[in-house]
Length: 362
Image 1 (tube, one colour):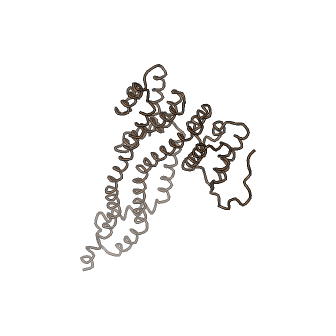
Image 2 (cartoon, helix red, strand yellow):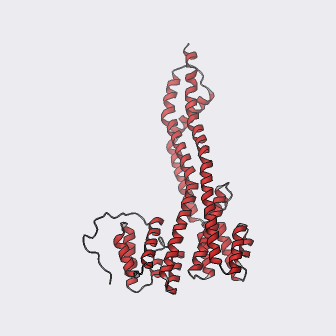
Image 3 (cartoon, rainbow, N blue to C red):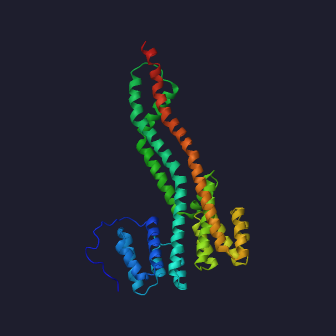
């Protein structure tokens, strides 16, 4: 029977909002710790529900506990919540339940989730940081054009003198932006919405964007090495958990988070199913680096594929980390130049006529 929480046990305010990856990773690590300590599954879930300050996560854990208490397997209960627990997560839990080693499986899942989250954070840093800084620079420039430049334009209109070409260009640009600001803002928001919808709803668009992203300088290298790291980490984790190789390759394909790598790994699955070694199918794909192929070859020959895949994942995760740091160091001066050109150019354009104001008055 489910134990009811006594009144007054906790007066903390529960957080609402959706369950994100961090919440899921924390829940996974806590459950892994409790199971490893020897606590029964049902009791572990109840304790986690009592200790959670997230309203939706707490409700989800209680629902899982009720289903497990009713005789449903944990994997089957998790599959009812695909927005929180993906197929790989459920497959690993299922393998743990089938083998009677759920605590070990949860330790692997927790490690995998934390590694995956750390890798995604590095990629987000590489993609979001420069975009955010440029967006702020553009926003500041737009505010200057809309609110500051017109004040200077009114001042300059009182003098009967020809303005410098740069100043006149900025004033004309500010006038057009002020007159069409609502339309331009609406068009920008609409374009972003359409792009997001097309990427989410149309696989052909998403695949094309994924393919183009791999061609970008530095960013493309980061995405390629991240895909290799995800492939290796996922295949190592699923292999250690006892998941069948064909299913493990399907999970690894989905985990790469890139259409070209996903399709390549699915083709590898078909080749491996026909008897081809994994390292040969990796080489035939043309997407995997030589070091990764060689380590997988050694692992297949020595019967230590899981260990070699773990080494591949760790090596390429480290390379992603180094590349992100390099990109950040490279972008910082470039971003300062962009901001200087945008904001400094506007200031110079507005002060050029003032430098010659004495001659005009004289």
